[in-house]
Image (cartoon, rainbow, N blue to C red; front, side, top):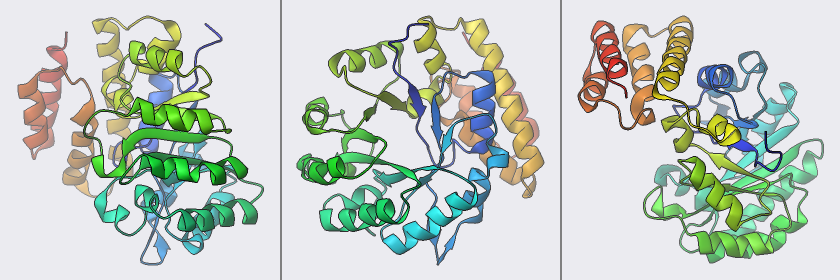
Length: 317
């Protein structure tokens, strides 16, 4: 293996990359240096129970997991970090990049970026109160404009952060439009911390292009690209693509492993299991049989779901 290859980190996506998915992906596809949990947050004064289950080390064996948190205020951050410490985590990622309006308008995620004093208060509280935790930060160029991340550079360079992940879009874009590589480059040249690139990496060539343009990168972070092609990290490391037969075999294994995990864990019966499994197919095999995918999305019965999955996989080229 080429030692100059960048480490691949698996970005978290709410509703998709939970513990069941991470465990199955690591076992069947591999190639990932670090997985991140979907962000843990406080709702109505308490941490969501599903978040607590998701980061439980018992559910994340044999992978390198960094739990991620989202919080608008130090008091909420401290509540979540206490949970991480209780589970013996020594790393944590602070989300300043989530673009979803319902959270952003409450100064969560990318919604904090126009307010540097709030970010300073949050990050300073984290790093000063918990020196035993290696904090990283994930952010976007800004909410309204790309200068917002540049305004944060003096602070970020001063703090004892393990690394920074930058997605070169604005929060108000969500996931629409093109990534702004010039905006990323401006931050890259001013950043003293290990920097990871995140955004629109779907192929080996995409990763190589970013690595060539930004040779000091400490790694790349991929979310939707890995959900669409779970073999992408392995293919980048091996510099070859899986054949259709190899991919089909592994996708079947991944589906079976996750289906069995959910069937064992979930208490909501057929409806809840179906809802979780429909998410599994939203990004996966984007060029797969559209009719079968549509049936998977619409079905309300597990029997019909299994038939549609078989149709989708049997027609995969």
